[in-house]
Length: 434
Ligand SMILES: Cc1cc2nc3c(=O)[nH]c(=O)nc-3n(C[C@H](O)[C@H](O)[C@H](O)COP(=O)(O)OP(=O)(O)OC[C@H]3O[C@@H](n4cnc5c(N)ncnc54)[C@H](O)[C@@H]3O)c2cc1C
Image 1 (cartoon, rainbow, N blue to C red):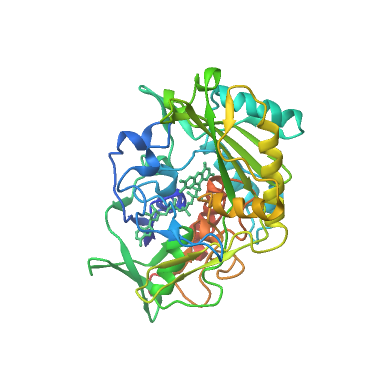
Image 2 (tube, rainbow, N blue to C red; image 1 turned 90 degrees about the horizontal axis):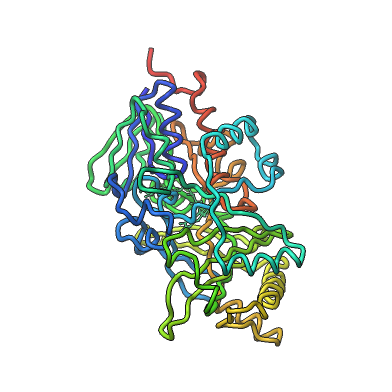
């Protein structure tokens, strides 16, 4: 059986490995580069990875709220996909999120992902330590950040999803090949067309292009339903910058360390502290506190324009209590840090309600966690098959039934593990003829 997997990202590498182990001949197609990785992709300080030319989609933008203009949105491109440029924070989040998925085998998938993804914890930097002490005193749950790093002869290096490809017997990786569309034939989708115009055929296709490119590819292939692209969501987040001096600049990414060492959470809100990331023009250090809602009510959509380019509308802070909660928690966290020695908030939140809401709009960013744009049970059946289209399934963060209440890399791997298990079952394979 020949299976075409589109996208060698977080989910795609795992899916390709499981299908290959089950005996499929796998063709794994990736729009971006293959190995070798540039040094910025391997280093524990991921700030360079996110601006490495060629390792993200440079023209991709997203609209945050109905009142904002599109701004750049990061997605990984190249082997490993977003797992090659992300913040490496490795968390499962609440188990109840997985129990709500309309699929079986999730517990076993969690266990396998957990075994396959050991993490490393690092010493917290000075700024994180001081901020997290305040959060701990105020009742936040504070702990070391589990990071997707491993030891190598040159020290700590990133562990991207490409580890799933190591030693795989029957995977043909095609880097630098962008798929333009899926060809819908009488037997469903068994062929894809590249941007170059060339085609590749197989017995079935698994789409792992991520939460933006997957719905875009479906729509550009004429596979349309109201559910494709609907429900796309990200965690609304605010980055607050601090000027650091004295003891607060002793450690951090400017000294080669990973930017994040601690995580604080409370009632669906996550706080991450980036230690000394560089020096300001006035010779002071620079630190960042990021505050994000992990359980927003708001969601948006992904569509295409007339040229078939992505239209990403995150529609953040549009529903429920999202805006009021974000304003409230920003006020609390900034207040808790106010008298920490050696640090000064460069953009304090204003007192008035209207001004604070405007401040949130001005500082609002996406968290690069977009997911759930083709959710299982909505655009897809519970095995990831696209309704009404034979030979085509989706296995990536777009298929997550809901935006996870945590950083989505591990939930994406759990979903990929569970759905790859279904795709490997003998009765799931299309008949290969008489
Ligand atoms: C900057 C950043 C920081 C993040 N930080 C964290 C974090 O610390 N912790 C965490 O848990 N999550 C984090 N995330 C989110 C997490 O990385 C993603 O949710 C997850 O990797 C998504 O996996 P995926 O397989 O759905 O997509 P991806 O990993 O993005 O893979 C999709 C792949 O498909 C390829 N592709 C797309 N279109 C085509 C096409 N037409 N033809 C061929 N190939 C194509 C892409 O190039 C890419 O390689 C972060 C994400 C980013 C971008």
